[in-house]
Figure 1 (spheres, rainbow, N blue to C red):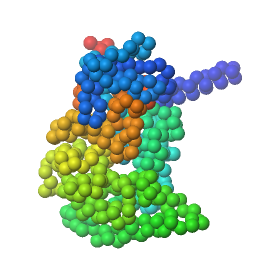
Figure 2: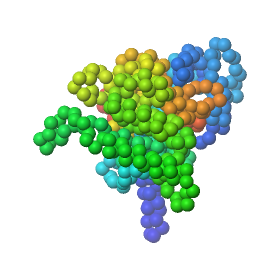
Figure 3: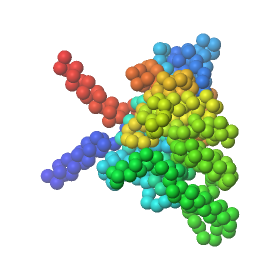
Figure 4: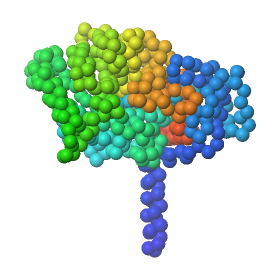
Length: 436
């Protein structure tokens, strides 16, 4: 009887585990793969209508026009992709994917630590590679993300991961790539619930808040240039923004704030800076271009912030900056940001509807993002020698009606496209079919 009980307990545990666990990560590629006949969107603006792509040992061995280059694919695993499209894996920057599983369950919420200045807080070690939310990215082609902490003036340090892994060590592509700062707001809105005018008004503490941040960086410089007899982990973490090994990502939206951030960069000798959000960046686009500062444009699906803004300003912001020569990538932080991250390609589709070309929009979620994050030597485009991180779609990947994936590869591994959502879709599709 005791043995039967133990067996039942084991079976229940296994059933429960299978119900909540993510899909098992794909094994390492063992056989060469040939993808033939697809329209290949390279990610750098080029398109090959009838392509042949060879994947060997997780790398892109060949990316060519099948009408020009003839290759013997007899001994390869062959995927006939005629009439379909191949894209580089989409990259979502500035995201808290894997840091929060269920908003209402505090034990699963690890996106922000207590404190104002916490550059030493590393998001990577809190990243949950088995997140059900993370696995729901893959069916839309979102295969890589920059996992970013939140809160405080200096939120912490981000890292870049791929979305098919056993743990955070396996997931890591680039460890501790950048420090994230929330720049003080130069203006604030009145608290209408306290009877204040809800309009914009100057932030009386703005100068003081900027000075506090500057003082903190001065202290960090002094520490890093000193004897370091007493270890200071926060100051150690900031060293990279001065020697160029880390980028400084600054969340700022207003025109004055962006101007002040550019001056802050030059004053402190910060080698690599990225504007995150950048709602008013189009007003100082020439200055951003001059200082070689890219912008991670905030989610395009939103309403204007100010009453005198163009009604479609959020939708066309990416184009306004691109036309000025600023390097632009798209991010999706904000309300319900983790589940909305899978809609990244459709944000790019919105940019197409408001003036940029499809290939320009594709770059905003592939190669441009890879360049900003510093991983473009291996990811972001379908080029020979780079990682075979890509997917095959039945149609236009920027259109939610036609972006239906048939295959996805991360470093040449054929990853699962199953998720909680796809299982429910199949379940209820069968239900209604049976009722016909």
